[in-house]
Length: 197
Image 1 (cartoon, rainbow, N blue to C red):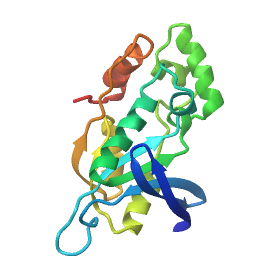
Image 2 (image 1 turned 90 degrees about the vertical axis):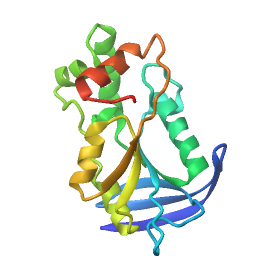
Image 3 (image 1 turned 45 degrees about the vertical axis):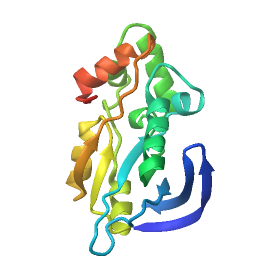
Image 4 (image 1 turned 60 degrees about the vertical axis):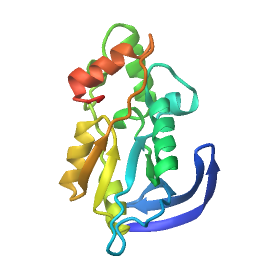
């Protein structure tokens, strides 16, 4: 069940968005919406929205950590949606769904030589515990069935398509690696199946 909890305007450096807080099966989901010239999936002319589903990353999004590419992907996603119109979803799924304290434990294991996948497994967690059902339910609630998805994560594409959301196009979000996240990005490509092109 999808319920709109609150809405407001949100001016940002990428333009003015409408922010909506949804509740889906007891969980809050944040959505920023930038309206393009033609409305999404309404009437005879269908405008397919650009969509980014971003999982929370306190270290990358808020603290500017260089260990990941999360903050840069957030910025690039909002920049693209701000320019073209679309929807930006923010989900509380820290550390690929294992939570903040466990993510920091995983960081410690990475400092000792494990990669991000090995660290999650050693802590007894799935490699990626995230789900995107809430976003699929909101898209259906908004009568949006076709999207262009801003992601490098092919698993995200599969999970949304399993919920009957058609991905018309996958738009990669490519950021420049740095000395702290280069191995992390290699692991995402080699072990998590991310495609950066």
